[in-house]
Image (cartoon, rainbow, N blue to C red; front, side, top):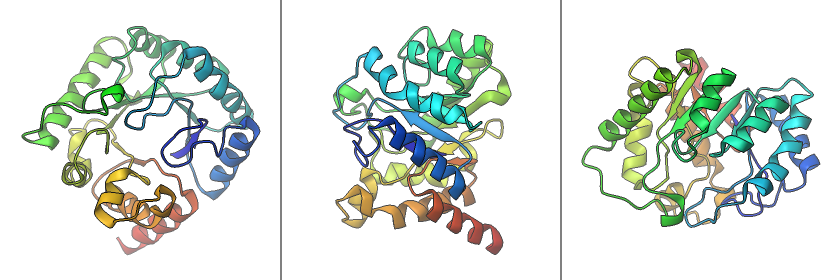
Amino acid sequence: MAIVNVTPDSFSDGGVRFDPQQAVDDGLRFVSEGADIIDVGGESTRPGSQPVPEAEELRRVLPVVEGLARHGIPISVDTRRAGVARVCLDAGARIVNDVSALRDDPDMLPLVAERDAAVVLMHRRGEVDSRYEGPAYRDVVAEVGRFLMERAATGEAAGVGHRHIVLDPGVGFGKTPEENLALIAAAGELGGGRYPVLIGTSRKGFIGRLTGVKEPRLRDPASIWLAVEATRRGAAIVRVHDVAGTRQALAVSAAMR
């Protein structure tokens, strides 16, 4: 899953693809480099970021979704809002990637079920406007895994197809570096053998804390290594910035196995 942020303030690449045509061009390049899914987002979820009005979020993402959909590319829309998801699904998106696990907008769950869309259910600690602060974990793997399985069960009870559910433990999003590493190591367990798991570590702040590299765009070597390790540990999908580098590393890892 390749990341296409159509925002001015994302932590790693804010503003790079604020022009819709640039975002479409980069999405096409990512596919040529080996991406299976393009994840288009119009609202930054970095700690402390401010919510974007729904109309503005839609203004950012819709031209990109439409442009990529014309090429038949599997598109994920990274949004917490049913209004944005609805229009993007109409425009050709196939997946809703919701960092709130369908909790922030009460209309999101029935929409996903009605449209028979695939969905990524993500765990986060706390809320974006509180910088993802919340109670400490006793056992992060058990607690995050329990939450994800509960959200999956809620989705299925509301009519979301079992085969359409992907679980994401939300690496970053209020966890410590040690907790993030534990979740990556447990990637194969978090879905309980029933659901595929997505791991997104690319360029995140905890890599900077582990390595001392402050500039997010310089964290690709560690990001690629973590993507390989996540798949080795059982992740079905990795969400990345550097598609070409990750594809090369995954190919060599697969050959070694």
